[in-house]
Image (cartoon, rainbow, N blue to C red):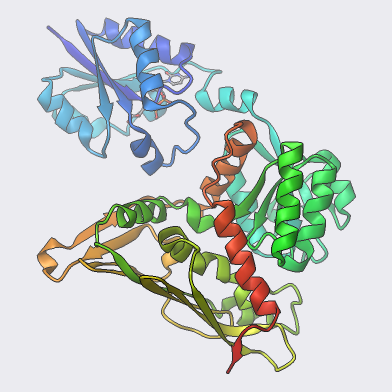
Amino acid sequence: MTKVITYGTYDLLHKGHIRLLERAKQLGDFLIVGVTADCFDRSRGKINVQQSLMERIEAIRATGLADQIIVEEYEGQKIDDIKKYDVDIFTVGSDWVGKFDYLNEFCKVVYLDRTQGISSSDIRSEFRNIRIGVIGESPIINKFIKECGYVNGVSIAGICSEDTSKLDLNALPLPLITNRIDKLLPCSDAIYVISRPEKHFGIIKEAFDFGKHVLCESPVTLKISDYYTLKAIADEKGLVLMDGVKTAYSTAFERLVLLVKGGIIGDVISIDSTCTSMEKFALYGEQEFKYLWNSITEWGPTALLPVFDILGTNYTDCHIITKLLAPSSDFDLFTKILLIYPHAVASVKIGQGVKSEGDLIISGTNGYVYVPAPWWKTDYFEVRYENSTQNRRFFYQLDGEGIRYEILSFVEQIESKIKNARISNNISSQTIKLIEDFYSKKFIEI
Ligand code: C2G
């Protein structure tokens, strides 16, 4: 009996996939089809897969072409499978020609012509065509627009900006560049806001008036009452208001929180979270670039995320210690926040004008989690114990600093009726409350 094996994601099964499977089956007497697991697809950069593993397996089963279905979960598994199932032929579409020649050591490798004119990506883009208007002046916009290219069915409607000096406009094909938001909104389905935080409320309110969904760099507003006003409008109009902290969409961070909540280091007693970066302040010092955010708005939401995600937001006391650029200024060069909980404490250090080690340390009664700098865009963390032989290391792919996952989550929120935002309203509102306290001068100045 000649055994044939082939692998694929098989998302939104179409005739190209089926033709491949039919010809693979003709190569032998027994066809094994390996369907890729969600985490394996994500690790190899396929983030747009719409169907779950079970849905994709069922679709393959329904074709009646597979004699056996297995799941592909890790890099290198093909060699294991070929040996384990005593496979004679490995086959895959010609878009992979050359990539699997190394398997010739274990079995015959056959590349079958790919069916032209159809792909899962094209099908996804037929289902989805979301035009995102971008509003702001930050150089992060360059990354955001580039990352949109990795999300099927998303395009950039244009940019509304008061100062485009930090934007790579020639690198980006943009249908519209304006400084008028009422020009951008009509040609957008949704907007991404990264303008100065004090302008967020007005911009989002206008976007809601035009019936547009909003992804806003955190903090969404500077006043908690404004945040509740916007949430009420969004709920009433059935619009999405999503808080954009890209770290929340990094697999490493998501898994870290789940492991800690699952007790991997025992009870969490202390969290030390540091986010500093002198880069922008050195480049655009406050005098020259009035759009530079201060430390509490630039880094506060990110640095507070692990604290609120793991310890919650019911702290009993809060101390804010800050170093201002000048006595009368709102621009904090450095701020330290101490949050006291009934059975834990958290220390958050943030700085646009002060440099420190940007790591994250979560201390527990059985061990601790160490995330090296820059922890907020890490693909790696360690769980460490007194007996270091028990230490464990975790790696998770992180493409584009997490921005493409954030965009994907935004469009999925728009399409689905279930609003299961990665950042809860509670975390968003409590972050805003702390920032509002800062602006109300509820701090100790050093
Ligand atoms: N395919 C095809 N014609 C198309 C689209 C896909 O012949 N129009 C083939 C691909 O070449 C592949 C199989 O159908 O052999 C499954 O395609 P995908 O679901 O896109 O998965 P892919 O990531 O290409 O799978 O490790 C090998 C990869 O997992 C191959």
